[in-house]
Image (cartoon, rainbow, N blue to C red; front, side, top):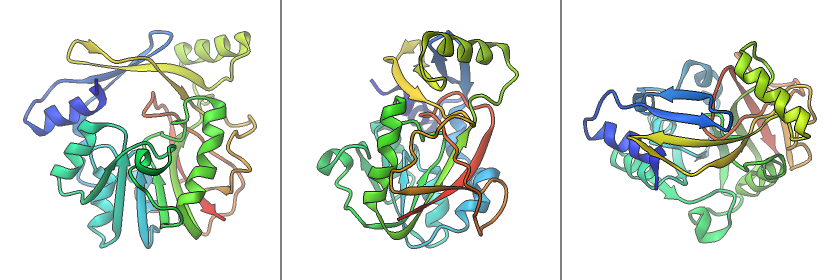
Length: 256
């Protein structure tokens, strides 16, 4: 089952008005229009940072190819990778070029055959920093991406602060996690689309003020919110896999 990919594939085929929802483990629901995958350019909060992409680019969790197409239009050599067969098919059909089906956290063929030390810029947009699923899984990600980056490479991330909210449902979820001893940003979520429910999957959102689970992974977080490099602040940001997004920023991370 691939409900994440079914939505953009149906939209590409002409279906309109069919929302894909993300349900959290407390029954909080966010609805998303698949048309977002077909925006003509990167979102405003992403464009300032992506303008500094250089060299060979890897777009992790590239979805239906929005970022890949935006960067390729600037003449950059872009490779995209996603775990959704439907999203990969859409990205390829849109002329995305080198789009791989695989999980970047795996190795070899399961990671789309990605070569180590092959990329100058790696993007991880769409609140996907938590694709490891748990705090521990999230801690694996920087080291893995550092393996794929050339010396001096850079990583661009969009993320959110899970604790930066006044919404009662989100505050209650955070409190429940704290009371149970669970990391505050851990969630379970599932996609729902066309009357069908996908399997529950884990996700992780970082909370500002908490120790970043990905420090020490060979990458040095530096904030680039709403401004252009040079990048200097030592504040890290975090996010979850295509999960409920309330407030997003953009940061740049330098690979060692």
